[in-house]
Amino acid sequence: MAILKVARMGHPILREVAKEVPRDEIATPGFQTFVDDMIETMREYDGAGLAAPQVHVSKRVVVMEIASNPRYPDAPSLPLSVLINPRITPLTERRVQIVEGCLSVPDIRGVVPRCAEIEFEALDRNGEPVRQRFEDFSAAVVQHECDHLDGILYLDRVVDTRSLSFLREFERYHVVPRVAD
Image 1: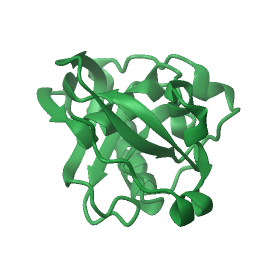
Image 2: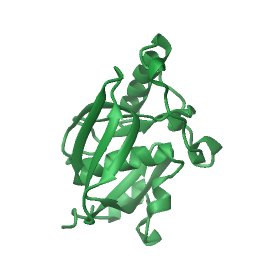
Image 3: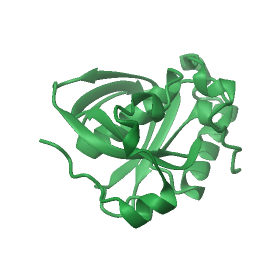
């Protein structure tokens, strides 16, 4: 396995719509190694998730996991998930205000309104269909990562730019907003 280079804001791949993964590609050794490398890269940088465009690959692939993550100590755990060609369906009009950061936009945080409850459909790393519902923080993680597949960065969704902060100043002066009801 390998740690992959993370694309940073300004790299054109982060603004492209990623290509669907053909079902017959999923079982190939090359694709499976790529998924393993994505997982290792996400864990190396303490990410809650990682999308393929963030590692310079235009494919609709997302990995997510939250388990004893120092960047998200109060977040609910999220088991390791591999989503291939995911589709999100909002299940409510209710929004939550989430402080987000991104491996592709290092050291900056901002508040993003996200749909509070979603359902996704995708293929897992074995090519089997999966469907799952998520709420609040976990729903925000899914939305953040899937946005990368459509060329959207979380900064594009920040409503009030006064919430933007460098990480060091955020840790010193900001209180993490509670999830809105």
